[in-house]
Amino acid sequence: MKTYRPRTPSQRQLLSISYRDVLTGEKKPSKQLTRGGKRAVGRNNVGRITVRHKGGGHKRVFRLVDFRYDKKDIPARVETIEYDPGRSAFISRVVYADGERRYVLTPTGVAKGATFIVSLEAPILPGNRTPLSKIPTGTFVYNVELNPGAGARLGRSAGNAIEVIANADGYAHLKLPSGEIRKVHEKNWASVGHVSNEEHKLRNFGKAGRMRWKGVRPTVRGSAMNPVDHPHGGGEGRQGIGLRRVKNIYGKAVGGIKTRHKKKYSRVFIVARRKNARERRR
Image 1: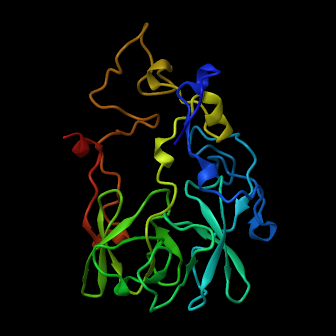
Image 2 (image 1 turned 180 degrees about the horizontal axis):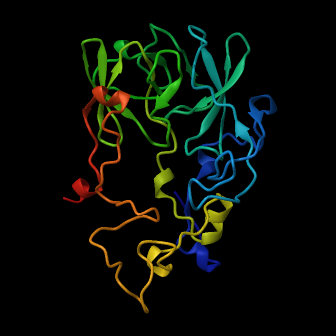
Image 3 (image 1 turned 60 degrees about the horizontal axis):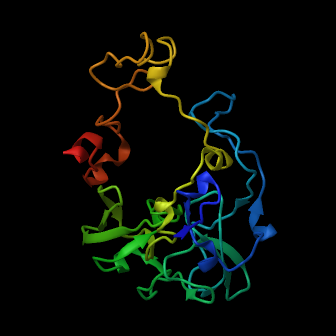
């Protein structure tokens, strides 16, 4: 992590990632592997806010990251390691042996010039991709598919890794970063290793302005609002919320409440569910 000499008040607690030690120096992404567009910033198709505290932020160029890995048995070489403003992990521009270039997620320990392959017989090395049936128990993986050929869905955030803890009855039992243990069909593919940028969660932005650059708008306490605006609002001066349980702006209880739908289709694949907030406090 990178610290700063406090020439300004915000730099006193500023803590950022040493990008110079990881990235390869390219300032602009490949134009053929990017596209523009307008971000939704928490609005739905009719412009109504569906996720609060989002809006503004610096303009971004969307990188077309390959999560399908449909070029099998063709070795690829890492050309660059780049920053992606749209995700927490680093991305790599790779060139396949047939000359095609794509962006992929960068695993930890993979540097410029490294090679990987997507194959049924791929060795268990960081970056290589193979079906879960070929991966031994105890191995950490990322970019895991939920349906064959549908592309990676699990284990894509910075520093994340999923542990293969068992293989039985045609399914691999995976321990997710949340603590949930889930069954995934052994025909699904996964990449070996950990996602890069494990220091992402240690950052300290130092000032509110940097959060605005990222598109995060201010959060107002419910107890500072009026009763019409929030269940916690109202009262003369500073008052308690007057409720037995904390609620959100929509009147739903928060903290230790199970929110997963009881009849969700994937419920049969959950071996052990993750702990909620109340259970983690015990």
